[in-house]
Every structure is written in C-alpha cells, then in structure tokens.
Image (tube, rainbow, N blue to C red):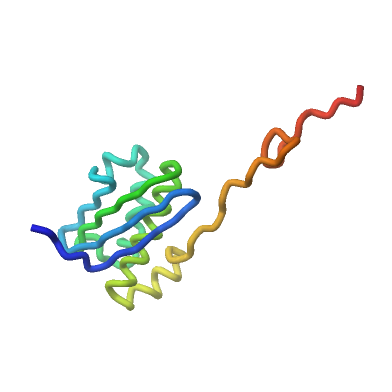
Length: 131
C-alpha cells in the first residue's frame, strides 16, 4: 500500500540536495532508506533535522521520507532541515511564520570558495621567498 504525500520540499545546503516527502504517520524520519539515528553518526545532526518539526509542534503527526545526496553530513543535515521546512509550509500556511522567524526557510547560500591559480588554496598563498 502506497501512502499519499501531504507535502514535498527540496532543501539545499552547500553541495547537498534533499528531497523531502511528508506523509501521515507516527513521527518516523527515514533518510535514504535508513532510520535517522542510523544515518547520522552525530546527535547534533539529528537535532538539526528535527528542528522544523519541533517549532511547528508536529513531531509525532507525520512520517518524513528524505532522499539526500551530495556533500558531507553537516551539509546534508542542513539540506534536510530546509526541505522539511518547505514541505511543512506546503501542508499548512500557519507554519510559515514560525519557520521564517527561526530562519529555516532561508537557503544558506554559503559555498566553498574556489581555488585560484598561482595559489595553494582559495586564499592561502605559496610561501614568499625574498632570496
């Protein structure tokens, strides 16, 4: 039996992209086929993902299914949070204000700066030699 998606949202952070599907259920969060505690090694990442559900007090009302790829665990957690917030706004317009106030709907646009030619990194230069 397939469950109907109540809301869908795409979240992005750094180079990570998360597709979030919210369904009726008991509050389980599944990321790439695994439980959230099995997917994220650090507890902080779990807390980041759950933040939009806690703010809207809908932690036990919905099941969340997330497909996330790209980047590291920190970027993926941020992308999941962004996607969940967008999907919750799709379900109920009353969720918009608390999510916007906490900054969960704003896409964090900070990216890694590219490496420049003639330098060791983005800003780090090779050691200067006078002689």
